[in-house]
Amino acid sequence: MAATIRDDAPYKDFAKRLTALRTEAGLTRAELGERIGVAGRSIVNYENGERIPYGDVCAKMAEVFGITTDELLGLENSELVMAREEAVARMYSINGRSGADRLRQVYADAASLAGGDLSDEQLLEFSLEMSKMAMLAQQRLRERHSSKKYQATVSEKAVQTDMAVKAIDDAIVTMNASREGKHGR
Image (cartoon, rainbow, N blue to C red; front, top):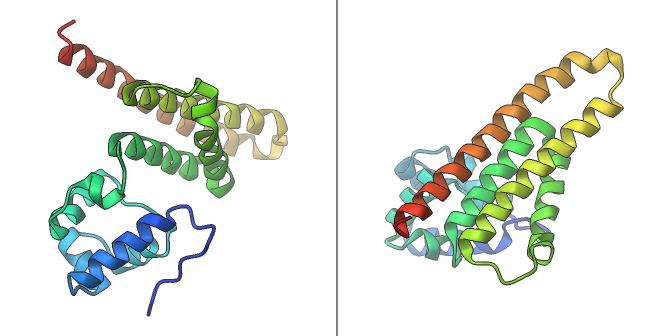
């Protein structure tokens, strides 16, 4: 069964690249999934352009094909993309597809909002900060527009949002500490 890649699939280019790599390696989806520790269904999601693998799975996949993660992802800055995708996944887990789609749109507009020529490190930090803002804005909308009947759900989602924002803050602190360590500050 061939995975169908929709024209509007979020990861269409990755899907094509992965399908070609897997086919060239002579692996079935199930075999690739087994080698990298994911279900065959995950491979189908990757190959139809709906999902992209996160850090450890991406690294295992690149190793199977004998390429770098940057080559696998077709990116110049895989760290930035991975951070964005983890933020989108958090947003999806809290707010569903519409929240994740809104966050993807924020990322699409991020370069122009940031003024264009940012270093990769600056763009990563900016993207993480934008993730936080999008998550907090979604939570405020939920609090403002949910009826009293759903306040327990709103409260649960607020806790999830707070945890996601804390994870982003921790990532920014770690990234800045690493950057300062590299530059001897």
